[in-house]
Length: 487
Image 1 (cartoon, one colour):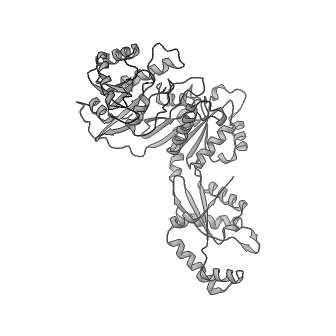
Image 2 (cartoon, rainbow, N blue to C red):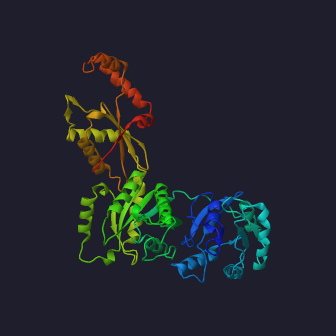
Image 3 (tube, helix red, strand yellow):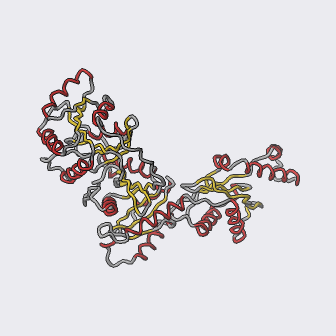
């Protein structure tokens, strides 16, 4: 975990803790809604104040009298955050005043002997600043009136919270951090897997679908490699998103996929791959991220062999054939240790580069094995193949005429490429670039003589193409046509 000083934001439900958390982070990380009990798990984010780096923790509302769902689990998560924190900000609602719950929370926090600052939230007008003095009866000397929604007095609040705090030595930024997101439908065991990996109750686990709502970033280290583990909310079908919170959770999950390096798609081994999993897998492919399929709850499956499940998946979703598959039980820990070996392999393949010489040798052998078909008296010629980027790996084919590259031959090249170079779990993007038109070609087209050929003109044409190729791959890649592949 981060060695930065930790600041925990606590308070009763619906006083604006998540809004303050987002304002401090300068990003919309936590879901904010008028309903109570939206935040459930602890949310962490690294930020800074005037050069002082620190980690801020958002918590769920503490209400000892509530009978709401997950109330005890939310309270436990808040207690862990209070225990971890170096400084604490307690948030109260200026529009309601002091409540018995505020007094209870104040007593709990004062027992910790940690620096506490009281944030009197929802003071949206400077003329209302005087209302903060009624909260002096809580016995917390540091009091600041703030407005989380308008961003008023946030810097003053943080200065007061860290008053007298000694600046730690500058921490070196994490190198080679692998962003690993755990995605899937609701109630497939994502949070259970995170808790097993971390050996702690980091996320609330429940058989009720939709328990996790925010995307939770958890830095940790495993066998010398640093990871940022992202636990996400389950992505429901569109018509099943009954609440606004469900929509926000789905958006957070999509953003988590975009900023991750590898996505672990969790499936329920009892149900197999559903239409929703295919949609999520497509989302991962379109984002260009590495993907690992993990079948959870394998300990509950009886009467089926792994080989049968794998065969069914490959037949039902052939576009995921390149993704590694793993059968685990997050509850018992079966095969979980194998996951990180696959993660490292997929991550390394996503950064793999192949030289142009090797690629051209591959193209020559592939075309010798299976010549491209003749179309209307013309045959496809592939002049060069080059890699232009990584994560995901992108390649460009320089050809004489893109229209001569049929879908069947595209699929053949793609399959041969996978067989030769692997790229386990990584989507491969291939684009095609046609030979540029010369002035002679345009003149012949205007005269209706495009089918003719003059040796000198043809030679100049190809020399012009080679010069264009040497100018750089990136320019050609931007102008190139996409090379869609379906296995």
